[in-house]
Image 1 (cartoon, rainbow, N blue to C red):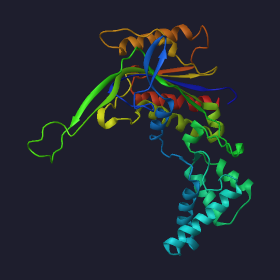
Image 2 (cartoon, rainbow, N blue to C red; image 1 turned 135 degrees about the horizontal axis):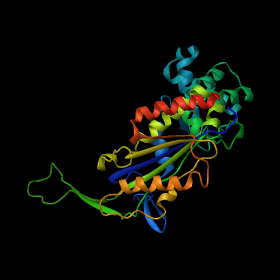
Image 3 (cartoon, rainbow, N blue to C red; image 1 turned 180 degrees about the vertical axis):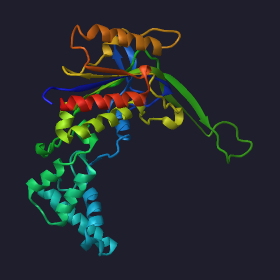
Image 4 (cartoon, rainbow, N blue to C red; image 1 turned 30 degrees about the horizontal axis):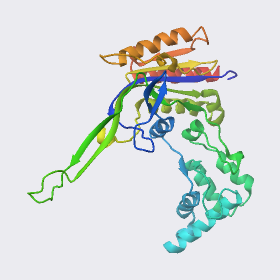
Length: 344
């Protein structure tokens, strides 16, 4: 494949009273857009939720020594034969040696930032540690091969060694409401089931801040770059898993309080050759309604797409909507077209 290939994913989704993504004060995150306050869910929150749909997930950790040591303990017969306390110490010693050789850990034996690593990379580094390999080039090779889909999609930045960086093939926008929102408060009380019979009132009282909204969500994938990292066949599978996860996931903030697990009301997926295009401009002028936002939001998105596509950028090469078929049909057609596009 010589040309660029992008997949854009657009979602309109209504969410009932909820607090799926909080700021440092416990309030639902917001943003001002088009001069009014919108509900907001950060890209990081939805990327984390999407990862749960991947068949294999990487691990993000600063305590890489323990992760590698646990794998050494499972793989190394010489360690397994030792008593548990000696086995743990010996495994950590070998893990520390190999990560020191790679110059990844500090004097305290941890990393200065979270490190994204796949299960296959963990096994490869553990085996090098067992074999006593301290060659930095070999260790780097073990840490850069066999990326999981989430590492290839979301990227990895390692300040201590830029050679271990992995470019992100995916971008996820902060979701915002298509309309203005007002913050509301749920005042709650909890009774003490074991209190004295003559004790009146609640044993605990408090408030939870929440809002409800119809969200516009957007993400894109540079499929050509993803294919460069994992190969054509795995790139198509990764796109399918990402689109599935992005459409069906929900961040878990306060989910037990609000049970707000909804699915999209509208899904639009496009395949483009020129560049990814976020259509949030459809909602720069906030939707106003007294009888629901979903239908008006879908109409605004379609009208804005018709205005932007062909005038400012190329028309989409392929376009899919769930309302024109089922989600499964969309995924099957998307993967079929991507397989053809990647080999064209």
